[in-house]
Image (tube, rainbow, N blue to C red; front, side):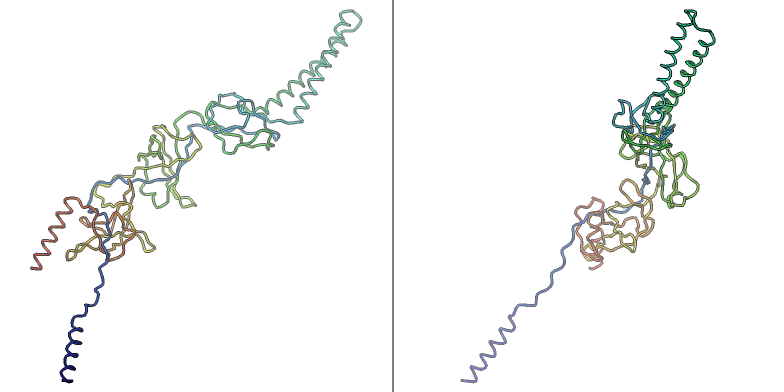
Length: 366
């Protein structure tokens, strides 16, 4: 009986071991939701964005002829400001020289004395009590005093800075009233009429893509222009200068201010492009993720690519991608090689292609 009980216990242990739960199977990583785009060749308008400065058709400087304190008329009480329209001959500022002002005051006083003496000698001559020679000498003294006053006024007049032509002020550095200025200081420049132009600089690598005749848009403004000049040589700073003539100045900032030049480069009729957000940039270069379906599951493969021109939020792909590839255009920055993905939405032609692939795979399996 003891042996029968032992056999029963062993049978119970064996039965318990057979009914234990199987080991846990690790769950697959969830598929990341992504947006896909089928790569294809189509017409592409690349553009190049560079910084430039608006330049007037004509330019003149207002320069201080002698050192002193700068004073402004009522219209410019706070100093000269960019953008203000001025007329030719209008007084923009005056340089105050203590020596010149003192000389003018002395010349006026001497003239008053000379004229008073002349009047007294004239009365004596008219009364017949003074010789004509004395009157003539007094007249000469008065004439000399007038000449000295005119010279003093002319000297002070040269310190009144007038606009040499009509146009718009460009002030690079504002100078406050009563400030001491040195001879040769440029208070302002005046931009005159004529066709505006924009001078910009592009990277040396873009030199071969630029040429006269390319259309230009100016930043967020509605204005437009055309490239007229492109420097044949690269300067010491590694840039190339270009000049765009403004054909429509609508919304363009004032001369002397900066603006972005959006240059429409030569159109590419058969270009393979992807949205800029599809690019993954690393130290090793640029890459994209291409989605591939394998046994009913869609995963991604990282493709190193060579990029070309840009424009309209897209980038031209020169190497590394083929027409028909399904490129991840939304969520690429969070992916790694081999990650499972789930397209957020697919165009009808993409869905049909996927079904055909699945059917082919299923038929091969059977």
